[in-house]
Image (cartoon, rainbow, N blue to C red):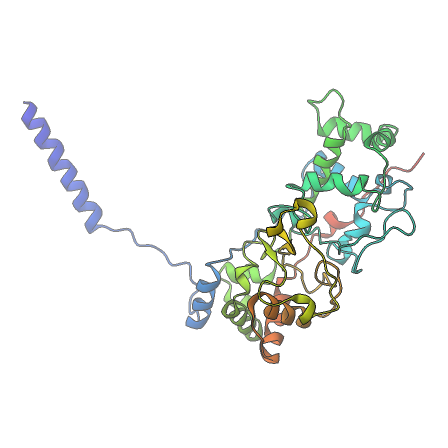
Length: 353
């Protein structure tokens, strides 16, 4: 009896294997009908490094995000009520102020590094040029208390201001119902971070990576091909095309000799005092790079083609032709995307008392 059962199970298993082998499911190709082979090859090469970014919803979806939006645009977050987060990271100009370096709330105070775009910052592995903040929330805490930026002397000053506004008290309580004391500095940063995670920008390049081969024109595809052949993706990788690695500016050639107008900056070394971090910076995202000029850590270069030329020479030890520089720049413009009007519009901010 036992042997019959074993025989039955064995025969059944073999039959199942035969069925699986002889009845392979047909895998449906995701490639567009009538696709161009060259486009498919270009896409396949790019897919080794990139994947399409999903589009954020057009509306904010929670009280926490709405609170973060209000705080982002509120000048109460600066010592004299003159600056908000949006002052240096203006959502109408692609999350930057288009200055080489930004002025602080106190007259005469000037930052020493270019203000990076806040758009797509949630896709980065860390924040600031030197990566000193691990998260958006940690980053949000920095400028508010920085004496060169928004210059609030200590967090209690800001919290007292917010507690004096009925609308904020109610919105903090609804956003943090589990907290007895909802208005805390951590919660301010949490709300701003929740809002900033909505600031992603899908572009035509994402449509191409989602197999819409007509999303890029011939020149843009040529630019993408040159971009990959040159090795630009060795630094500008990931969904943000940057924001992941830390690389020494001038790995192949001294950047002060290639572009003497760029200020010397010790980079991460200022923070870590590790000799291996000298002149290292976080690789910036290339999304919206067409709009986020001026370029580099000091904002000293205003022309996109010129910045590509400097990068090719200093990081790749390559001198690209004028035609290649032009086409890479054309491709980079396909990375421009938009935040929905409702999300980037200034909300109703409670009046000062």
